[in-house]
Length: 256
Image 1 (cartoon, rainbow, N blue to C red):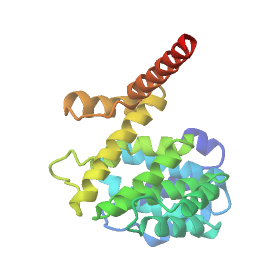
Image 2: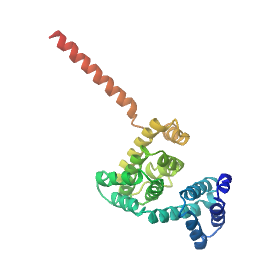
Image 3: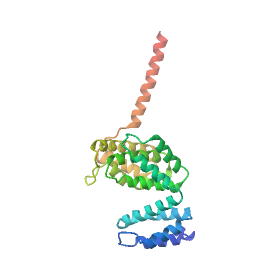
């Protein structure tokens, strides 16, 4: 924050502080307008504002709802003004389906849109996190499939998701009694299994870099005793069996 002030970011920080230092149910429209005006023409200011809001959500739970509303409104509005409406539309279409998989064409389009724009990527991440709150397991399932695709490809996306990992796991694994997975039950079961599978894969690939991933994986596996598919070990076993099978065939051919 101090560095932001030194680089001219004191204005947006001051506005955010005023906007979030309130007990109101909504953000003051005048302050929200002022914040959007400050960040509109500066990606540096926009990034500073987003990081400040994310930091506030971590440090002060009582301001969490207000901060979330502010950062989503700010980023979504800024995204629309810079052409961000496209990723929102694509995500909406991709998750509004009864199919068992995300439409490959829509998924390819989403990845193409966010590839060269951090603003679009942040917009996509926040939109997907918001969709995970929908009271329908089919929407959550398709949303989770998109999350996995972006998680495996983008460091920035991983950083955003890892900061919200507890919420994501609660809404996909459904391990909290107070937050059961919504209907339909058949899809909820698939959602839960896929979320567990993805967490294992994410931890195996990136756990060394993200403490939250390691802690989340350890909690579900060793505290809650959830069953993980152990994909890496199975893959090694399959590879070993394949090599053994080839060796047997070679020996058999020599004997002939």
